[in-house]
Length: 174
Image 1 (cartoon, one colour):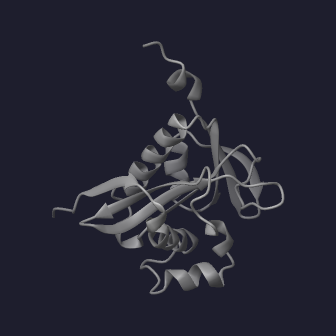
Image 2 (cartoon, rainbow, N blue to C red):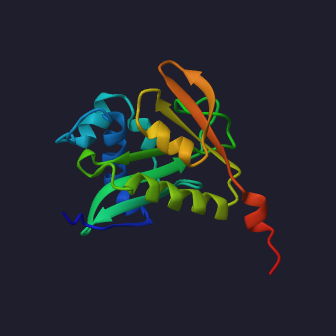
């Protein structure tokens, strides 16, 4: 069986609905099919604040598509001590989110999204990224494979951090 090939591109503010859908897929990671209304999932779970005023300085995202349809997204943004999410480390470490449509998981889409986002973070001079993942989420294996390490226990989840190789990328000799 041939599977459609996915592509990954940098997101724009116009991709906010795709990023919101990916947030819903991340929140409902145990669901075998996507919710009919990702917007409602984000609102009802109290996570709408995670993408409020999206598009500000430091907000960065990538979208995965198959045949022009968004099937996943990964993003990161900075938080403050007063306003943050579960994987918060400090005000200088952007927190990452990732969601893939359940019908398209286990096809390398999450890996492609994260690789794209990690490369962009290094180009932007980001020194580290954090995330939150529930301990029994299979995505833990992906995060570990890509170099994220446990930083802290947060309820039934882990905050994980990946240090980036910013120095070698930004200070290479010509």
